[in-house]
Amino acid sequence: MLIIALATSATVDAKEQLTPGMILNKIEAMPREAAKAELTKLLEETAQTSSKDYKQLVASLEEMLSEPTWDSHNEELFAMLIEHASSASCLNERERMRPKSLLEVVRKNAPGSVANDINYETLDGARHKLSDISTPYTLIYFNDPECLSCAKVKERLDTTALLKNMVSDSTLTVVGVYTLDNVEEWKLEPFPDYIINSWDFEQKVEGEQTYDLMTLPMFYLLDREKRVILKNEASLNRVLKVMGTLKGMEDSGIEAKLDAIWKRNN
Image 1 (cartoon, one colour):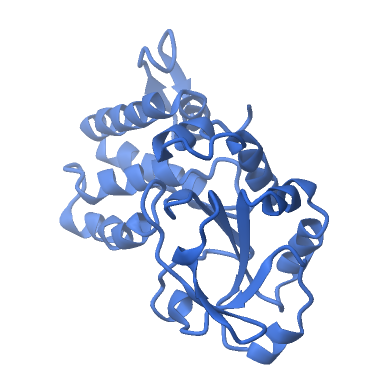
Image 2: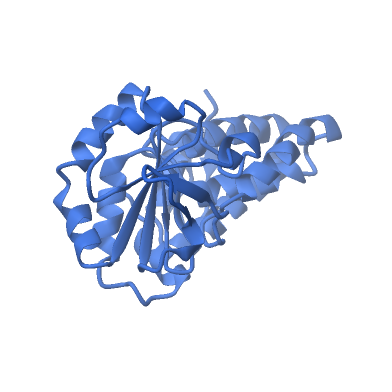
């Protein structure tokens, strides 16, 4: 296991021997901008010290930051990690190829950016655009009627008072999006009545990979301007915590919202 001697004043008071997981816990406990600066400093220092340690650190952090089902999942830090590795001088060109190839995916629908639009069809045959939704928040619930995990999450969504109340007072729109082509199965699937049940009839999410869906179900949370607040979030608990945090912040800027939801264990 990789052990790193970390001696940065923002993270610890004295030199410590820390695993990547311990380091990440310390970084994620910081305010958002300080955490991003600390990750950059850590990567730079490790790259200058040892190519081998740098590669092991990047591999460990990539797994922890990119996996949507893990508590350590963090899209902003993951993007920073891949950006750094794609141009790290301690790696050779072959070693930089993989992070370079991930950059397009990482930058797609990144937190703070405007999400890709989705043209969707509802059960009555009407067609709409994600960009036409006018509520302060839009929650996209990517799902599949043949997905067992989706069914379990949908049962919870059916009884979730917070989301229902936010929809009722026109603060939130929840759009369930089915991205595959088994339309008959989609039409037969029962759905919570406060959620728009839709199908990506253009098949762009899957065909053009306009959204990076590592697993299902998957949530994306957008603000009024369709800027991404949460990307690739697999945990409904996390979504509900974020929605509770954002109540009353409808007119705040995207940076204030991203700062507000940064810490996972408030």
